[in-house]
Amino acid sequence: STPLENSDIYIFIAEHKDTGKYFCRSFFPKEKKDYTEGQPRYTMLYKEKKNLTTGETVIQYDRLTPKTQT
Image (cartoon, rainbow, N blue to C red; front, side):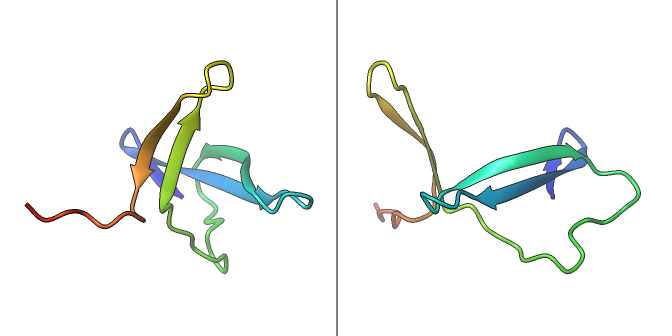
């Protein structure tokens, strides 16, 4: 689950059997049932968006690269 606009939503991911990459299978708002019970927790470490037309890549989230000290 993750917070969104003062509420929680559930995001279910699955692993693609051929590529081994993960994708969003479904998502919906949290109501009464706790679907996180007994499930493994994951932390997003890196997210990028790639424009397939231009090939441009924009890093949206990066917790893998060490921060440089200034």
